[in-house]
Amino acid sequence: MEGGTEAYPDLGRHCQLSDCHQLDFLPFTCHACQKVFCVEHRSCKSHECPKSDFNSRKVLVCEICSMSIETTGYQVEDHKAILRKHEESGDCDPKKKKKPTCPVKRCKGILTFSNTSTCKTCRIQVKEANNKFLTALLARNGKDCGNRSRASSSTPANPSVKAC
Figure (cartoon, rainbow, N blue to C red):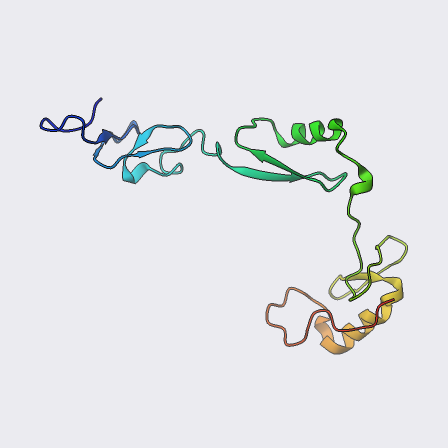
């Protein structure tokens, strides 16, 4: 089906959506499926494009080494297969995994299961040596402690407390 009118046969194109076929003088070409659509069906969502994630980018994070792996719509593999391929490639090193560190100012201590204290109110974890940090936080902020979910807080979430 060609576009245009009797006087101008090369002007415009018909929408390639099966239910539409509207003649559009400013047609749009889908970046994913390369078909031509009218203004109403130009988005991937409106014409239910089968290749809508063709140009999309996603990032997977390896649970072993914390490395970010970028994927695109060109890759049709599932996430588990991509992570398995990453593990087998030799790039996956468990020693590279970032360990959680203490949030107290000037404390760069790594949190482990044996040296960590957790606040019962806000669930913030600090190094055992910074236990006074939790006490100061509770005294300063009252019941809410260091709860970071409060958007409008007049007091800082991490008050200045000497680190270990």
